[in-house]
Image (cartoon, rainbow, N blue to C red; front, side, top):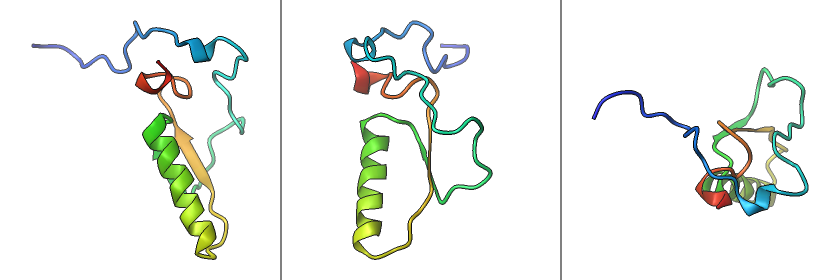
Length: 83
């Protein structure tokens, strides 16, 4: 086997969940922030779960509010999570 891994795949199938409303490409900021307390790579079920539980545990522990940055190669929940 040779060549690049080709990730993310250019032939990914569109999910039913991505039909309406069009939330694809949603951003909360125009530019990426210079600093983030927590950076999560991937917005699938694992990434979303990590952010949810981490923030839940921090809030229950009385820790001050943290900034979170989620980075995604494509669109929110586009890969296996969205199928």
